[in-house]
Amino acid sequence: GRQWATRRMAEGLYKTAGRLRDRGLPPLTLWDVSKKGGGKVSHHSSHRNGVDADLRLYGSPKQNAELIVAAVDSMPVRQFYLNASRIREVCPHIRRDHPSHARRLCGYHGSGALLREWKGHTEHIHVRID
Image (tube, rainbow, N blue to C red; front, top):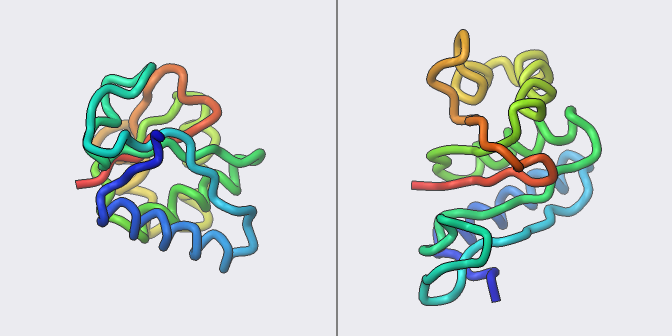
């Protein structure tokens, strides 16, 4: 099992799933979280203590923007990691549909954003909480 999370992460994921459901989006799909008791999870340098989770992305940038906003509204996100091209796809939707979240998530002129570029994160978004 790679589906263990801290209580704070589990509650945040549950709230995120509820917000997505309330917005009429498909169910939240979890990929890797952590192993119970910690330890190395294959293909990850993190995911060792229950505060990191991989969430499967949806098919459209607008839906992915909603996923990101639902997550940041549901838990104390320290950082999101996502492929650069995906960030460029979601930020216009966040700026247009959720302007109060735009600076925090997408930054201002490329700095100070919770959304950070990480190679290989094209099918999922990595979320890390405090």
